[in-house]
Amino acid sequence: MNIRGPTSGTVWHSRLVSYRTGVKCGVNAALYLISSKRALTWACCGLLAAWLCNPAAATSGEKTVYWTTNSADAAACQGQLNMIFGALQEYQKRNQNLPRWLSDLVPDYIHDRNTLVCPYVLKTGNLKKFREKYFLGRVFKDPGSCSYGYEFCTESWEVPGWTTRIYKERQMELIGFNVPIVRCFAHRPVLNLAFDGSLYPSTPEWEDTFVRSSKQNAVLHNIFLLTNISENKLVSKLSEPRKPETNAGLLDLSTQCNASLLHLSQIDQSGKLLIPYPEGVRQIAGVQFDVRAIVHLGARQFPILLPEKIENIPVNRKCRAIHFLHGATFPASNGSKVASFVIHFREGGLAEMPIIYGRDVKTRWFNQNQKSELEPPKPAWISSPDRVGANGKSLRLYMSSWRKQNADPDVTTIDFISHMTESAPFLLAITIE
Ligand SMILES: [Zn+2]
Image (cartoon, rainbow, N blue to C red):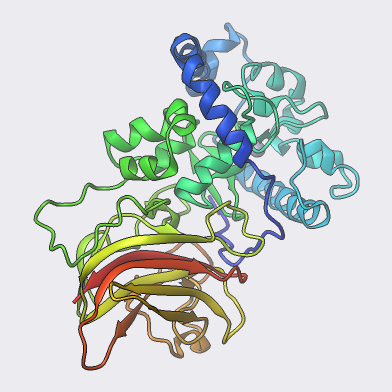
């Protein structure tokens, strides 16, 4: 199966719909609805999942086949999914928002309406029956002629005040751009078009791809957790707990982390999750760091709603040096200040350590064969090239250190601030010397 690699450099042109209000309403409403609706909803989810895994059971003995395992059929569908991705980007650029349904892309962004029907479904002439089989799925309710599941539709969702899109945006906060935006169930494995334009196969429940433990399974497959507890608590559930013996100089960022390390993962052509990042207590560039999750800040026109700053990271100790392990999502122009670490002293006053693009940091994915990419700054961490794209990409992380000559000042807190350029800064760990 020939699946296109991720377009990690893809930049959506504007933030998606604002959903913070929706989250608040949804959370409050969910608190009293959860007990009564949980059983019913889980029953519905289970029914849908059971059918998705075994559609033959729902055909009541009919001979019609609603899906294919043929790789040529998958390749033809991938071509269309690429066209749909291009149209979605263009729509978003012009309208500052995603369409309600894929059929809203016709005719201005997609001229041939058959582009919204999987070639296999078109070939077998079963669009009507194919859609009838997905009566439980909101994402299949496009009022136009469409066989694809549109995960970012604005249909209302289990929890009042929430839509399917809000739910998907919440998932993106947690695990990043691998969340599918369009899916085709006419194939086994199912084909997924991720938010960054990459294509990958998965089981009918794509979240399975990211599950590495029963604890993660319980988070990623529990829709009510996503609507009920804060990002920070969800991230804690998706992360390894801090080991009690960890040196206190390796700061515990558990209460500041708002994104899981899965933001730095890739999925290969076979649908396998690749983990290129360091995890746990690791020696990087000669310094020990405790890496378990990410403090991810926002950027201008960044498609995931992330905070501009995280303030008051507690330190409360004398510091000879402070080491930051960090990175950036998407490039900014060389020389621009993408982030700052602001260090507050007990005796008053503060020091700002700016993070300059091209001097202290560059965007996280790069091609090691590209000579210009090997120029400074030198990364503190480089992963082996993956086999996802045409050339294979590596992950790079940077270390920046702050020192005060001839003094060990008592530091109370640190602020991490994004300057909202095109590049979204993220922090993995802080170590005090
Ligand atoms: Zn298809």
